[in-house]
Image (cartoon, rainbow, N blue to C red; front, side, top):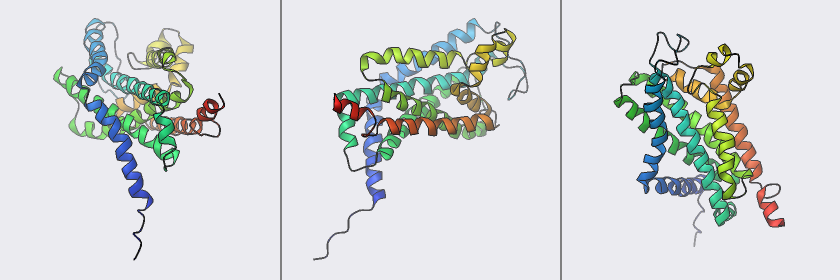
Length: 275
């Protein structure tokens, strides 16, 4: 009898991708309240801050804008970044939970390279972020924030890249957050500085004008700032090459650090095993 040939590596990887990504997506879709809760925060900022600070923050004519704009229009890219940032941290929490429950140890012993497993986790987190971002854009359109349809299509790949950067950041943090009890503190030390020291809510020239040179410098080197600016330019049909380069480099760096952290020879598995 002729032995049945074994399937190649790619069918095996595709099945693994369907299993890992499908698990994350199905968990999300089974909980409609999770989507609602994920959108409450940016919508609250969008409605309350846009009304309260409409006449406080003047947005000058700076690229990519060609005329004065309403403050709620300026806020949209920053709130898209907020969605991706919080979802990236939520994905990190899921990784910490899986590690505590032993799921990650089981997955890492599967006949699949660690890089592929973490890449599928990264893709799942990115997909969830982009889904929420698209829903938020639809809601913002209902409140009068409109963009050119072609520009929206062109912005979608940039949104994917920005979401991938923040999902990779969450993946990297999951290596160093050992317990669920420590996660809230870690989130506060990562999310809020990244969000507030950025052009998400106000242009960077406001910081420079106010004399906050140190904050202005931090904001310029904040990867979240580049994620927001890349989406801001893309929504107007322009490309911010510097920000795109930072996003790509940052994603690869965070993923490489996460991959190193989940190495059984040097990461948390060895440390837990020694304990």
